[in-house]
Image 1 (spheres, rainbow, N blue to C red):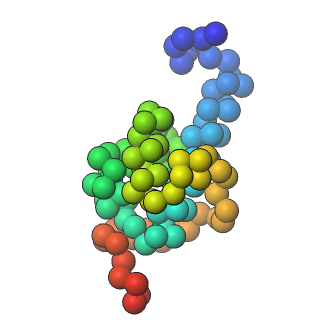
Image 2 (image 1 turned 90 degrees about the vertical axis):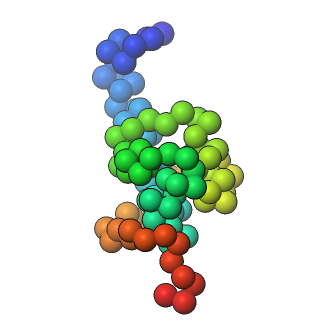
Length: 103
């Protein structure tokens, strides 16, 4: 069992990359469904905005305890973060706080 990233096989590294991308895309999908900005998710979860960006784009790993923090903010069970995204990624970023329900 490898203990360092450089000791992992190419196959294992590929699987980790795919899983990070899947979880990140799902977090982004749930965040956008709630009209929540990356900044707001970061502030409410205790993570930095750069960390949220890295997670959503599959570039950063996250401690599993932090998944619960993110799930709490998104008001979903943590298991929802591990599901594949339901829709294609949206390319229109929203940079405010929570959007008002009226539009």
